[in-house]
Image 1: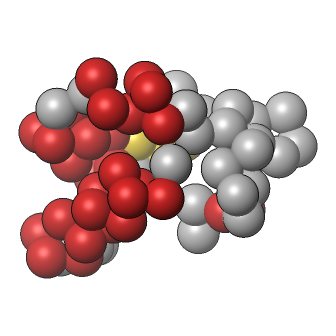
Image 2: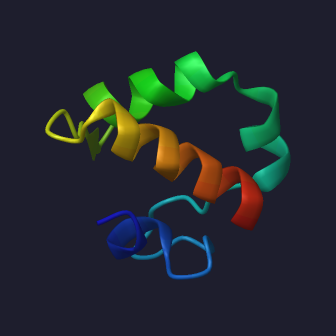
Image 3: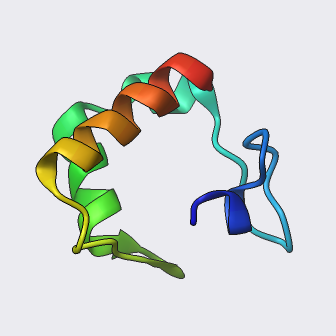
Length: 65
């Protein structure tokens, strides 16, 4: 779901922002959890993800970005 807007390589697509690894590193896990779960701006929230899925996504983003 994320790649649809943020791109396969976090470069951003269709006018949506990429995911900046440096900025991501400055955000705490709690803030990332909140953004993923409730959304921000035009990004929808993914409230149906379990806590385990959200934690896995955060780990993936930190490792890959």
